[in-house]
Length: 346
Image: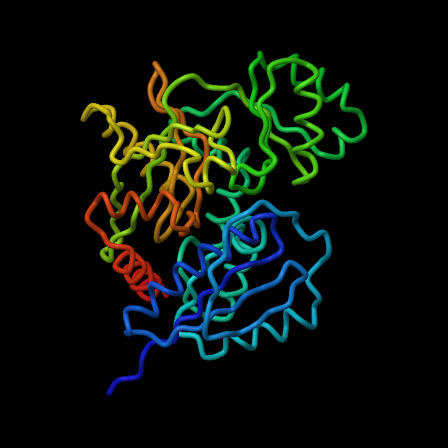
């Protein structure tokens, strides 16, 4: 009997998306275990940087949290790396800085450990929304008008920051941390007072804050899946209609009834083609690998790319599994496919 592949699902981490990552990782862990084809283990990293190896991954309900402001203890990180010694593949289920921004990807690459998803450069570029937008535009993709400011400048003078934004953009605006996901730290601003509060709030999540024009149109997302031959295909487009707030915020994403997620979206064939084309071009512009999911607004002028997620959520309410299901790909088959792509890429 041939030895089963040993797959380690990694989750948790120091980012504010810790619990979302734990929920994704638990879902992936169970799917891999249920196939009976793999020797599956989980490595969880606490917010404080403690690494733990286990043969089970308890279910977690996603909820917003605070990012750790302490560096991972060096001795703990070195000890944790030893837990990867016998891994055939690492399935990364992190969201946010450290696990999704290229940091961990670079470490795994230096250890010659195969892992799912994009490499260090694409991961870092996609996480940095402002830099990603530069690449999108270079490749002919439309993006929202925006302005990036440092959190340090905002803390030094919110008044000056507000003036700089109002000199460049018109209301309404979207204010968000430049790094991170799950819509944590994101606010809408319709006036000076709201902009001031939104800048202060977003500056607590990251060293840089991105302010963008609020687009009018249909809110869509489109996942891209890499084939074993190296080609990529777009999955069915999903339309998002939030119920909890004015946009697709944390509650809309993760709470039951938070939004309607229509898959496939009710688009014309031409509209769907253009959105899927934009998602594939965004994936390639950043150099993504394995899979990605790009958020897009369909405006009167056509698709406008917001951002690309290199490790899309894998929770029960996540969008990539829904799109895969609509394409006839069951969740366990999706996970097995991502493992196969990771092995082929080594």
